[in-house]
View 1 (cartoon, rainbow, N blue to C red):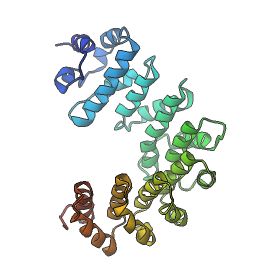
View 2 (cartoon, one colour):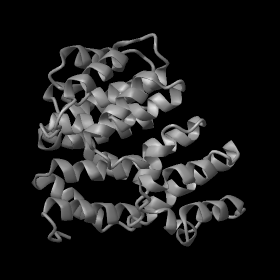
View 3 (cartoon, rainbow, N blue to C red):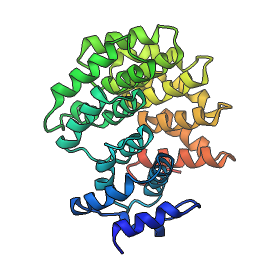
View 4 (spheres, helix red, strand yellow):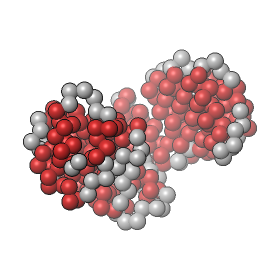
Length: 303
């Protein structure tokens, strides 16, 4: 059955899509592009948006589905929500071609929401750059993210997402200074993103700030502080006394983030705490602790 036939059938469905409905759209090639887009673009915007969202969900559940070509075509869809889904769907594409495309979308798309999604998407390339594994395009990437992160006239959502991704550029003093200013700005969302950037920088200079945030009254800031501490790995050993109480936080997301952080930081104290949590009656927390212990042991169970 051709991709266009499958798409026509999918378009008529009034129930949620299943893998059986869309399996034939997996693995499409450029040869399918013209016929697919002719049908796709004739569908109402609401239906295109719904299909794209459901394809994202199915791809997360079934890793064998390969929608890469499809998502690259939908980056040009007229509907912003579809373009956002396409950006999310291309998360594993780390090619130079995709980097250039994502930078272009980030800097020039008509929708602020799409540009913010692209900023999030660029984080994988910034991470590769920090690891010295980005083949090319690092300078253009850093310039684009830095310009947005430093531009206080941009919409908050766009700027904060740029700041998060720019955090990987630890040696860029302008970015790191902006991280400091945004955390101290008094704006909740900017403070959250600043903590994300601190963790991604892996700079010990942020330990005091992260440590203070671990005890903040804001659940969102405590959560991001746990994540940031985990990103710093063994550099965050001094923060362990402040992380231990959070594994019993009434907010499950914070507790799970704290457990994850302990697994990333490691050490005897973290291991003992994780073993204790692994015996908890709370299934989610005990399972998370078991997984953290397994990571600490390099795949061998420590429970």
